[in-house]
Length: 378
Image (cartoon, rainbow, N blue to C red; front, side):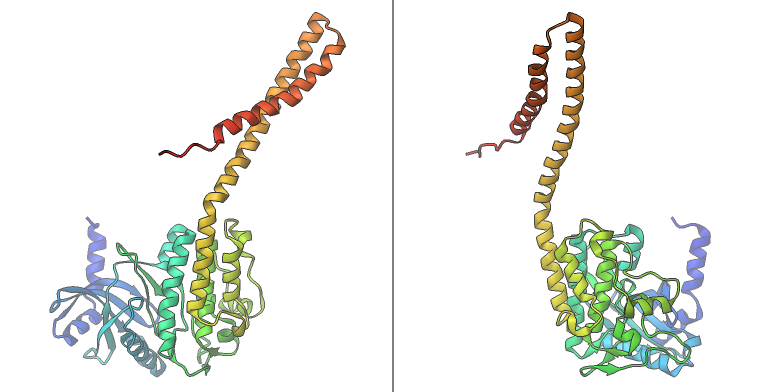
């Protein structure tokens, strides 16, 4: 049971003016339960849609942003973009509306789970199998959007939802999505110097020239894949300008150097997705996803063999340590015997050869006996 203070705070947040306005605008059909999150532009609630007895999420524009015409346009664009995408990997929009105070909102699918950003914050990095699953799912959703002439422009872990129970991967937040024909020029910086998009995931062309097409989303997806595999972003910096400059000018650290278990094929696929020139990347987000999936499956298939060789290497190290200890003990014992009983020196050389040559041979025979192939059962 939640502490009383936390429960009261959630109630206070859920029953704020915005929540009441949404309920009035829907005629009481949507009953707000709690706040899910809030960004610079909007607040998102979890609610109950009474008529269909289902949980929904409601995204409503914040009052302080309603005076900005570009924000209103962006918010409406997001609702239209998401409502037009009927794809299992894109969060569905059920309806749109406007509060009594003129604030636009839309009711969308509620996904029980967490964002990819939250999972990365909790785990640091993800297993290769999970990385390929997430990347291919997001790539599939992007390919669908690109086929409808939409570029997302803000692909990042915070906009990827991971559904609890089913494991579904969904892409959300099309607030910066833009209809394109070929290449579309956009304004990279707003009048206040705000970067359009998230600096950590911007493609070089989006950061530098304000030109985007489907390959820009592919670059952002490759940044996300790099982060999932390495447990950190390809570029680090204290300011947005640092990220923008590095995306345009610098080469990220070689992935296997940060995560030694990364195969060369996986690293090569991510590197191609991160190429500075759009034409050097894969032809589509789907092609990138499939290339990473293929490289990942090959790496996972080779993993048992790699572990087998590591097992033999470990046994060799253990055998060497055992041999060194045993040889030292036997030589000490032989020295004591020769000195105590004053044996002729002619016996010492055969004894040393027996120790130096016999012990390794014995260890090899024992190793073979332990690992020899077993007959198949009938």
